[in-house]
Length: 515
Image 1: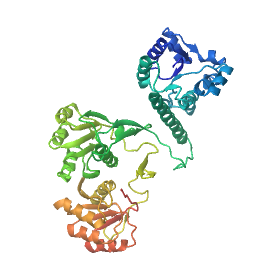
Image 2: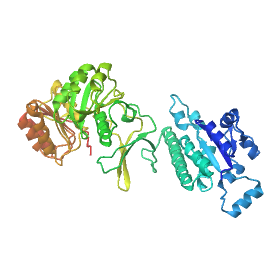
Image 3: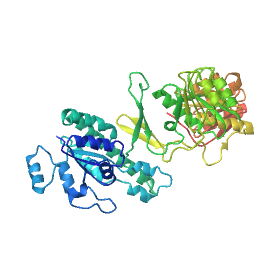
Image 4: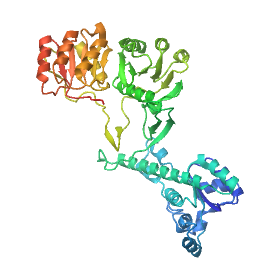
């Protein structure tokens, strides 16, 4: 039976109606501070916690409920005769229900210019303590932290006169899930304030919140869900606003994220097309319609059913081109009204509005990859080239135009699965050879997909050439210049081959594996 309940909430959504319905069930209400004022202001009888404890709130409200008269009432096991005898002797009455949500720590730290002192002051102490006490004793105490559960609890109480053990266990779980996340947010914030925080802490605690459950995962037989970070997500996919089309799938999200990672490499107007996690077309131009044309013509076969992202607003001219083929997703910082009118004719085309001009990653972004029994964690690969100058290693140096092509190819190959090869020329990607088990196959694939445009183009390799076979293939195709990290014990073989065929080659000294 629920005879006494304590209510103390920061989020007062539905609290007055909850209090009213509990009162109608004959439940004695205890409360504090603003919650008590809200309940009393609605004409509902309520008793102050200080009247129960005989001790006033103090230290600017830091101490209110931290008292044996409260916690003994929460923790006494009703089926334990010794417990019940002890609290009777002490004059403690059981508390059968706790309705609490916590100080808004997350909302506080997300405010621009929040001070460390403000953040610390919004760490709740009494709330989590009562929640944990009540949840520990969940077989006897109903503990509710989420306003979404108010109706469920009240309906059971009004129908049966009590709350089922099944519901109590569910609410118990939700409390510890919530307090774990709450503590994780606090430790992440405090860690961010340290000047010499460990790069990789001994104990890794992370927290995310669910955005949506997916229809399925990578394959229809796999269940999946999408979660977002709780901190700064500006410029990332979870911050996008969907304007049109059906729900994003697991593969949509994964592939779009990869497209956005490549788009971050560009500070000029660019369009990136991706298929199955690999770039299949990149175009750079002053106008977005021209950039799209270049990206599309780079590989009009692969782009079909692909994902297109751009860092420039999509206008009517661009939308007309995009509407001519089947695309899964288009992401842009803005769509003009005319562009929306054209693109929304396609019922299932997903249109996402996102500030894709943000080139930096959120602070402290990490790559996390779950493996069976563990987790791999690394820094994000947010560098393109080392701080040192590029090294021309051949007798022939690339021209200014060739260097421009080389850098475009280098940006693209960084985001192709390894072993990766990318070919580019005149602000356009050509053939891309991703994910082969040896580099010569990737090279041959990229050359074949480039067609006649390959002559005079630039080729990038995400890692060094172990042999000179890739250079020989480039020479046969008419490639004019190569960019690669260097570092092979047989670098000289590739350098000699370049010199023999009149190919300029540049070493970056930086590898970009992507597995």
